[in-house]
Amino acid sequence: MTPRLSAPRTSPQTKPRRPRNAVVSKQALLKAAQSLFGQRGFEGTTIRDIGESAGVDPALIARYFGSKAELYIAAVVAEAQVDHSSSDFEGLEDMTAAMVGRIDEQGLGPVTQALIRSDTRNEIRQAAQAHMARRMVAPMVADMTRRGVDAPRLRSEIVVSALIGINLGRALGWFDELKTVPKERLVDLVTALLDAS
Amino acid sequence: MTPRLSAPRTSPQTKPRRPRNAVVSKQALLKAAQSLFGQRGFEGTTIRDIGESAGVDPALIARYFGSKAELYIAAVVAEAQVDHSSSDFEGLEDMTAAMVGRIDEQGLGPVTQALIRSDTRNEIRQAAQAHMARRMVAPMVADMTRRGVDAPRLRSEIVVSALIGINLGRALGWFDELKTVPKERLVDLVTALLDAS
DNA sequence: GAACGATGTCATTGGTTGATGACATCACGG
DNA sequence: CCGTGATGTCATCAACCAATGACATCGTTC
Image 1 (tube, rainbow over the protein chains, first blue to last red):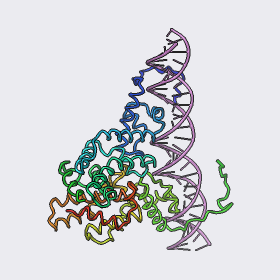
Image 2 (cartoon, each protein chain N blue to C red):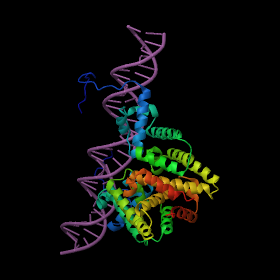
Image 3 (cartoon, rainbow over the protein chains, first blue to last red):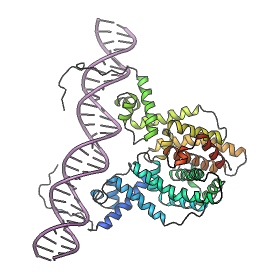
Image 4 (tube, each protein chain N blue to C red):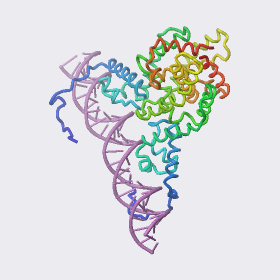
């Protein structure tokens, strides 16, 4: 409706145009995508939401990332790379503290979201699983092997899954005390519980 | 297309009409909803899917349940009630075995789905949380209190969250060994791990 | 400073979904 | 035997979404 005819674009008041910088726009989209995908998941987030949050036209998502799904993948790998900065495995307590701290500050994040949401595409989920296996399970397996624990891989997978569950419960507010207990206390209890290996 | 004109409905071959029984249709819808919602979650399931799976016209969902969301609630409470038939808390091992068995046979189920999906409506999630608190946390708290464990509620919430995480990992195939290990072996290891309380 | 590519904006399109109302058909009571 | 309400079926609507292409505008290079 109101076919706009050929009215010059600069007629009543020109909307402040975004500075013409592809890198900045792309980064803004990626950052907004990490935040929104991490909070609402893939299906719960629209490209319009991302565009609005980033102050960027949603059509640029197609231009820079190809599609919404590829933007999601980009958000996952970006988060995974940031994670790489953290040091190596230094025991269950550090891993627990790192996870809880992350969750408390930033929410679940795209990687965890990709793990639990059944509507994520296969490639995305596999990337997230590989990330977890590499960053969490593998170091724990090495540690258990060094200490001569039986069935180190299966045990590690169980412990990591339990950790994820505890963090999910805290982030999503399943239970009152788990949600509100101070981080240090939680880390202590969880470490004591899962360290019996 | 093909505007059908005024051709008599009984012209070429009449589609076998569903027997005229509201109760049967409603039950079929509820059962299909439990299965599909449990597998794909709320957003991932369309009312057309449910109708097709149940062999019932999707429009009847609106008639019998009011809306898709109310059907979801009905599926959750139905599952919760079935759960009520199971006996009381008889120790961590039984709880673990029951959860793993359920997951292996039927997938996550609407209650767990409602817990982990961020797109579930508040009333639904609260119902699922209340169900977990009542059926899992409360019995464990009672058991720990009887045994004089410190901070029984928080510990129970942690253990239950860990259990959920382990079952999530198994059902969603996060890690290879966790996914394929026989149920009995898994129950043994998990019980041993979480029983250090 | 002119041309051309890069970048941002907008409208539209095709598709899917949940919901709704009209209609056909059956069951049951009078 | 008839009518009235319950039940099943169908077509369609309104809303939403991702994706696409046309177009305007900026910047850079020659």
